[in-house]
Image 1 (cartoon, rainbow, N blue to C red):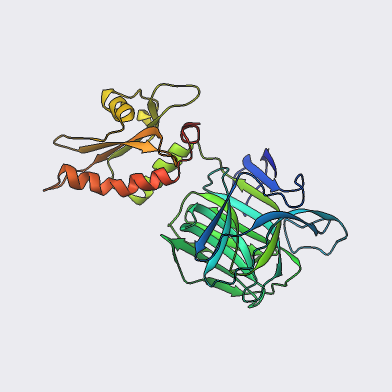
Image 2: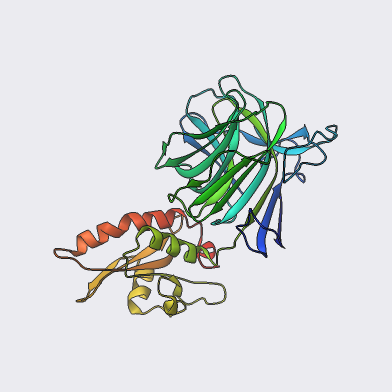
Length: 354
């Protein structure tokens, strides 16, 4: 897989400002049969995981990024990504999740072709994905002729929404997803696929490709324009504050290449950022044990943060408004689901801090 990063003076439907960052994902440097690195094959729903590999396919020499896909010379066969397994299990959603950046506000444009399928002919993208059980989906259906949006929340799929649109099997199409805050826009071949959606389930996450059941589909260049997050720690704090607006304060501690001592990476209160960890946080980090304390005005719960491998990579400290009858046990129980959610998004210490 070839990945290109640059700074682009580009505007996403009037949303993204100048100097938005760009990621371009293509597979032109790979060989037929290769499995691209930097991705995780996942399965939402049931059935077998997808079989994702590089194939050679005829692709128009010019694919419009602003409108319908053209019908230029199709004699050029280049490497593209394809999902080729034919497991017909209903409610089977193979996902190929890119383990690169975590995105907030973005526009993602991808070119895809639905090759074949018996029970289903569906392809699309996942975005703002925490994992295969929690993500947004935008996809096109060549059998029913429609473009739909839905989401998975804790593994449960919501009812799809969208409109009927001409989706042809065996032809290249463009699917575009734009997000800003809680607002989502979806376009298909340059046309608005449905009215703007407002949803606050996921504010940040990863992106990837998806199909359904026995659909075989290919994906060519994917272009992602986005507003860079200052850091994963900052994005996690902002997401938690959005979900728990009554939290008095929140700090995430970690280490960076530039500052190897434990310090505040992100916090609800801006002046806290950069503070060196005190004895309590140092002890929680080194001993991998939580700590509870309280004053007349607040309760504090300090817990270790782990990456996907279970390694301690940081500390999170919650400042909670006390209420009558609140105990150490129910204070910790209140924040534990939030900690588990944070840990599900942390790949490594470097990802958290740098």
